Image (cartoon, rainbow, N blue to C red; front, side, top):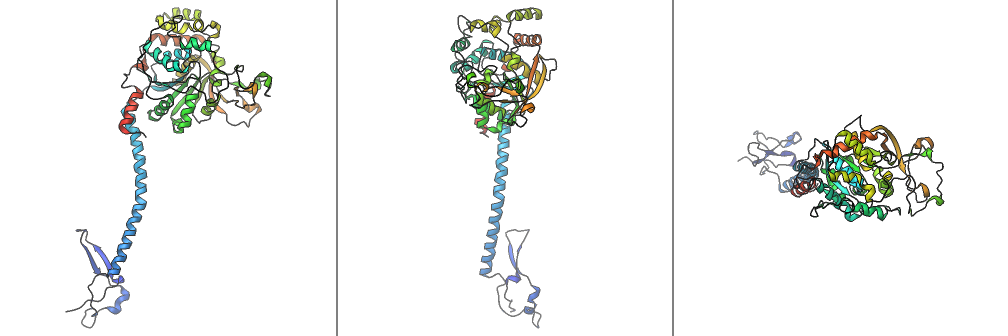
Length: 480
C-alpha cells in the first residue's frame, strides 16, 4: 500500500463545495518549493505516512483566525447598520405621525400666541374667517394684558360664542416673564379686559363653562406643532414673546420649521433721531414703574424673550410697528359709516365686541387703535403677496433693543439705522416692517371678514383637531 507524505501549512487549502456548502474538504496543495519531496522512482510521492489533513495546531490556528475575522466584520457592520436603522426609524416615525394627523396642507398653518387683550380677540375673530389661513393652535401668556386665569378662558369663551366650539386647540403658557422690568398693566385696565365678555356692564354674555383647553401646555404645543407639521408654520405674536422664547430655548430644532414670525407692535426708531444716547438716571431707572416713552408694550413686558427670539435664526421677521398701529384709530363713527357703505350688518355680539373697549376699560375712544388685528391683517396680506393690501409701504431694517441695566431711559428702546453711526454693532435682527397704512382699505377687509362667519379654521371636529390627533398619533407611533 502506498503511503502519503506529511502535509504542511504550505500544502493545505480548504475547499468549499458550492453545491453543498456544508461539505468542506481538505486537499493537498503542492508548493513549488516542495518539489524535493515529490515522487520517487515509481512515480509516487515520498514514503512518509500522513492522514492527508491539517494537524490539530493547524486547525486551531485557522479557527482562531476565522473567529477574529468574524468579530471584525460584526464590529464594523453592526454600528453602521444600527445608525442607518435608527435614522430610518426616526424618519419613518415622523412620516407616520404626519400621515396619521392628516393635516390640511392647502392652507397656511398659523400659531397665534396671545396675551388675550380685547384687540387680540379681534385678531382671532378675523383670522378664523380667512380662507387661506389654518389656525392650528392658539397659545396664551399670562404676563401681559390679561390675568393668567382669564387668558385661555377668554379665548375659549370667544370661540364658543362665535360657533367655533372645540375647533381650535387653546393652550395655557407662561405667566411670568423671562425678565421683569418692573412695569405691569394697571389693574383697572386688566379687570375690564378680563371681564370684557361676561360683565353685566360690558358684553354681558353667558359662556360655556365646560370648554376645555388643550391637553398640551403652550410651549409643548408650539414645539410639537412645528415638529410634526407637514409645512412651515407661521407664528403671529400678539403679546409678550415669553412662550416663543421658551419653546426655542427648549428645542432649537424647531427654528427651521418656523416660516415667518409676525409681530404686533415693536419699536423701530432711527438711532439718529435720539438727541442723546447717554443714559440719564433722572429720566428713568430700574425698576420701571412707568414704561419709558416710545417703547412697545408687548416688547417691554418681556424684553429678554424678544432678544432671544430675534437672535434665534428664524428666517423671516415681519412687524406691524406700534407707531403705525396708532395711525389706525378704532373710531366708532368711522366703523358705522363703513358698515353702511359696504351694506354689512354685524351680529349684535360681534358689533359690541369691536366697539366697547373704550367704555369697558374706562379709556377715551381716542386711546384705542386697531392694534393686534392690524398685525393679523398684515400677515394675511404678505402670505398672499397682496400688493393692494392696507399696508402700502414696507421697509427692510436691522434692529436691536437695548437691554443694558445701565441704559436708564434708553432701556427697551428699539433702534434701527446703525450703519450710519455704529456700523460695527453686532446682534442686529433683520425685520420687514410696515411704514405706511391705508385705514379705509384696512377697515373694509376687517369688517368684511368678521361679518362672513365662514369660520374656516373651525371646520374640524374635536377628535380631528390638530392637538388631539397629534396626541393620538404620538401614542400610536411613538415620539420622535
